[in-house]
Image 1 (cartoon, rainbow, N blue to C red):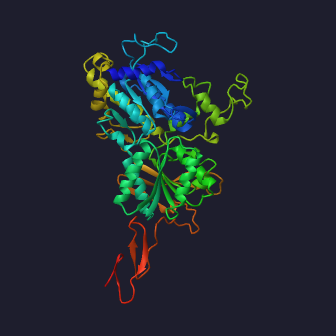
Image 2: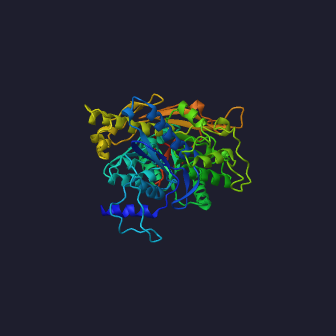
Image 3: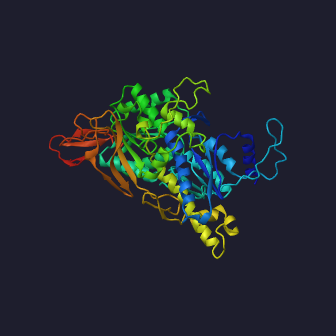
Length: 536
């Protein structure tokens, strides 16, 4: 309890920033990366796809659930949604706002010496949707577990989050990185690449991907030439140094990436500065996925990249919801105005803020002409909210059976650990696009992956991610004829430390690397017994 009180004291010292408050009988918390990280734990530029779109997906799901008479029997779901700024440290501070304050406030004082005021009417959350980045979910799950608050992430894939001794009430609608590493190594095998480099982002996501990828490489028939880790506060010089390190291994043309989106883009920018556009073939995890902003202005460096993304499907109803939003009708989202101005490069009230930019026209709408495209993990955000709704619905039916109300005392007093173990992990339902949502015993989602090739569209100056295959445990389905390579002959690039030996030669393996060798002729009156041995 002393640990809880110490942590909650921090909440009294933090100024509360913008938030979304939706009233309801039951409150779900939401943590989304509305902004990118700036520095160690500050907030930077807006994160439209992974921030605004995903939090709107939570609001969209809540609206649908509260209109659905077949779910929760009149019990309404509300929400408190906060911005993590893509930072584990900032997310931890925000999470404290969801939790009950200590009962004894007598020893606490504000910076000006006054006594802190507590909102006694504040409802505590029943569960949490978020975070997006694995580093965020790891820190948040550690704290929420102390207060028996279950959590469902729609995007965090680090394998370590499946450790129930540390994150006992954590679940996710996506699979762990161990499977994603299998996808990427299967692609390496498919194209007969035997020598590749690896770049990861520092932190839980990158570390998890690196461990899984290196383990699969050792078990397979390929080698990793070099591993580079992007530190959290990397600058241009750091990325330039990484590119130079990769260039010193020219045989390893394929570079596997377990990096956050901003790090992937910074690598492309560094490759452009080094005039190394044709030196690399990128094989990227879902940290890159199908994000359009990563390749903007860097198409020459990104073209032919193969990227991996969860096999999510577009929800047409969500697109209609987003395209109907304007700054006038979306007053519940305090960040939507910033998003609107960023998308349309205009100012909502230029005169009021002495802004010289163009005023936003009243006719503006979010659509394809404005660059709108549904984010890759919107389906999994909606699934996470619905998973709580179905679990709570089943709990209400069981605990309130035989009573005249669905929001009975036994249901109101349901402990978060019981909600997680007895209802959430056992929920199974069909989502809005017809996919079956369920969790395994570790709380992991069971979702296949889709594989994309970034290419320039025919007869166009536009670029897009073209589906070229699918992976489902543990089988790769890939149509190589759909892949557009930039090699002179149009064939897959070679990524090997050494070339195959000719007839009459054997391989003398390098003691430093089993994928590198020199070819040696057996000599007169000797024959090749196998690829490593000449006859005496």
